[in-house]
Image 1 (cartoon, chains in turn brown, yellow):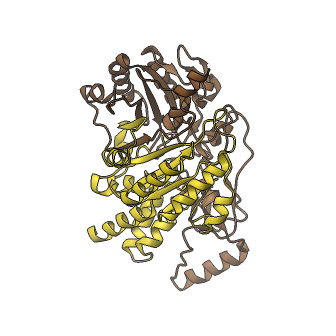
Image 2: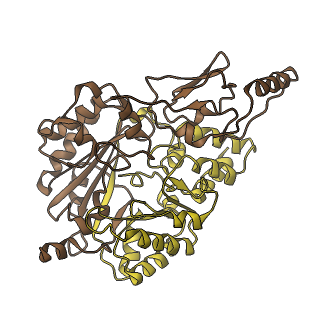
Image 3: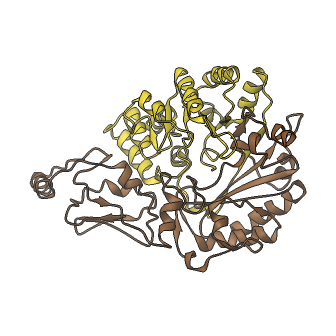
Length: 272
Length: 209
């Protein structure tokens, strides 16, 4: 993100909105730490431009200060429309691709940071019984991640023998899905978060979970991970015991696919 | 996406937080899905959601114009509705089962509660996903109070500092909890932010001050 210094009046409204804490006021104008900015455009989308004349706003602010008064603008405005999204070149464009939920990934043609995961599993059959899915997200909540950390985790998971989801945007950035190595020119790029999606046999779950625990100590950010499966006919869930045995406390909340999609994967298989 | 999977909170607080959305499988059942998704959001709206989202707009940024939101839905949309009580979800699930729209439905919320609702409606859940928690440099994270609010935007667009500011402003009575919750919901473009729960959490913050 860029901030037009000629327009900025230093109101500071953009500072708390910034998801990465990358904006500060220097000499009365907001400025963006470009190395930390993840180009999520949250400030631009959230702060409505009031379109006011910067000279007029600065004049009023100066006048109020003479009387020891301050005017707090509503928290969702940029008085002068000083925020300016830049045109991004590769590899910096990855920052926006992964951080701005309103953009579409050029690699996958999809929105968001991952794929449909289990949300269409009733129709796609992507995660059959006997397989366990993982969605390993780095940078969330609120810290962001560099692709160098993504590579550390991806390489560890590759060694554990997982299968990387081919339509996931991080998989697209791998030079070799057998090793989990990423393209070298992207390693210093920072994004709000990115998700490694992979699956393995149920028997491999303890090893994958142990890998996640170990590799979490090697990265500079946080990892939020999800574990998914097709429910068994008796409504049981294949990974519960393995996760607990590995020392993980599963969340109280989760995502449930109701199985209302049509045609069901099994129906499509039979028809074929 | 894992965007509604890692919402933080106690069982009591999460019992007022359910997100329901529909998804089509590209290349399989996307044809004609736009009208089905429109129907989904209309049915959801009838049950009084606290927020809805579609096509990069939430209830706040769309100016409350629900009809325009519904009319704009295509097979590429991701309509979402958020509820603060499980009974509304139960009624909506019943309607969705009856209408048999043929598109995948996912509910994000307390898994035991969701499972009970599905059983009572004669539905056997198909697939499930849990969070195994937060690993790594957790010492860099803010307090649980802040995470409970910020994690309601799964894409991370509600910053920790924005939450801090809204907590401070409600404590200073510059904003009511409802106003602050509405400001917090703005950056969450997919509409998964639970405005009613945020209001309750901000009210608690004032009481604890």
